[in-house]
Image (cartoon, rainbow, N blue to C red; front, top):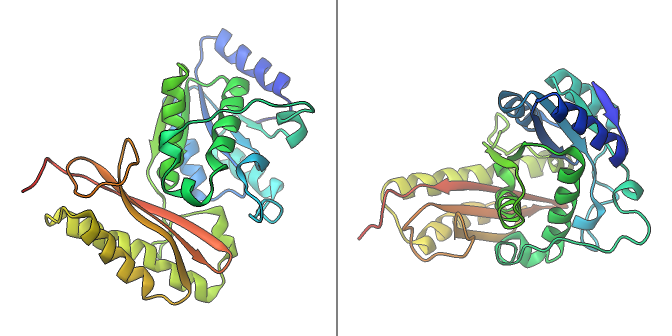
Length: 286
């Protein structure tokens, strides 16, 4: 497995792959990897000849007072996991390589960033879109894989690729969960024993909502109330949002009339956890 640290080296690697008529699958990460990331590598391998994983803790997607400095990092552990997962290349630029002196260009995806996490993290998705666009330009993939746990991020990247005519197939990968139901996340490291026990309420709430929707409930407010009741029963949790949104536009909906997503964000001490479930609807209900 090659380890590359500069844009120039990454582009040269990508050019060699493409000149041989081979395809590149890309998995962008911020490191401190877990089995959810490994599953993305395996999905990329099924679609492409060569798999590239990036590790970059992107400072521009962290707001004031957020956890950029304390975000968990363990490069040697990550390197071993990426190699064991079967990736061909690990791309790990530093901040000066990604944002050299005088850097002043950003990518703004408007409407789909205004709800959900965009309400409390208004600059977050501009940082996400910008860094992903830069990574795409370095890696030159035909395929890129993103986990559905960050559902809004997935929607934002799909919108950016469509709007900017990027010739990249964006693949959404299913959420991978711990045995206790908690969605795998690098930030789970922040959870103490009590907080981890409390955080199980997220998957319980989403399971209950999905079951209620499958039984025919179409009122978004009824589903939100159900989820809030389950989450609020945990005194260690502090709700940021619980919403039902259109799965494409991410606008709030009043009734389930086409595919929607219930998305939640909840603080457990300093850990802010997000989770979601897709609500499939066959058609408008009376």
